[in-house]
Length: 364
Image (cartoon, rainbow, N blue to C red; front, side, top):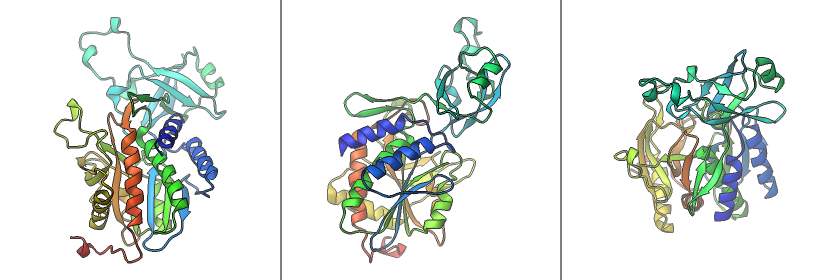
């Protein structure tokens, strides 16, 4: 399991899949599902689902395939390219980053987000973050004609140059650990669910458009109408100096369970998990001797914020893995947390029997 999780995570991280442009990632995941003889279907938006029949409350277990990035918004006469941000891209982490522009031919074009020469910056400029509207990309071409001849058009998707490596012994560093690591966990869950002999019906879903205001999972949840929804995503690791005081989530400390998330701005949305789900995973973790970390964060938002509101309401919870340096070009997770998360999810699903109660009063 550990080696498969590592390879699946690294391979998926190396594929560009901007929100709304997840097709390469989806096709690769579908191929891997096919390789283990699991059938899958794609809807009009690009969500990929696999169904495992069973008995009891139906479960939607899902993670998003897409990543944040940029859209080409203007091509200058001199060949420089202006970008619009897509998703929560941190402006202070952009200067001098390598990016790739995905063109229709499937040939990615490398560029750099420029950083003004240090020798030419004034004293004040040295301590300022350049706004994304003022940044531009150099792709090594000297005219707009050359840029267009290469296949680059306004609206082209742009992502951090894909990077995936093992750091130290068991840590994975690179682009789009959020949420390709969770996609790798779902692939491992597909292998386990295919071989099981009992349990609840499970819709395994790889969703789109999460980084673009949580769009893709909404119609999927409306169509599937699950009783239970379990979303897999990052949990903010708080074991670095810059995160001190934000919580008790340790990289390598085991999977995480969110008890509270609230964006705090924009949609003003979030999730307070259903008590049945909290009880379920606490009991599964104790029975399997899996350390289970707890998270409560403002500034975090997932697909579950809307999935929980489908139909008559869905018993929901955010589960995940600790992650450092989220939304940067070098995110960091621990492979052992992914292994433990997979074990916990499988154990939790195994405890959902036909008479599993979703009555809040049975759990509070």
